[in-house]
Length: 156
Image (cartoon, rainbow, N blue to C red; front, top):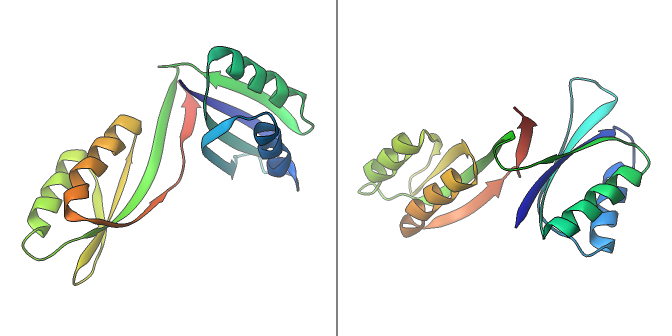
């Protein structure tokens, strides 16, 4: 089962290394990790998506709260948060297939942000089910390159 955890941490050198080390040292598998400053310059928001059962999740939260420089930890259960990810996908796009790619983008509210002779770069923002469905539809054209931000979450 996937779990999304958000931690408010002090924006100091080595905090990310300690958090990642804690997860890896205890055998947690990180699906996604995102860290960025908040509106308060001294704090950063760390969002982690982990795979594991409820007992593993409880252990991860307890261990995270014990770390120095961790201010707050929140576990988002299903439906408690707005969850999004940004994806940039470079897709093979011959002249005959561009209109079909554009239609898929329109349906998913994705944007074409770059056009080259043989490829387009597409930007999509959404939750896991939306982005997965979008990427499945692009696969037949040929995904040449993919970049993902990782999950961001904020309590409703």
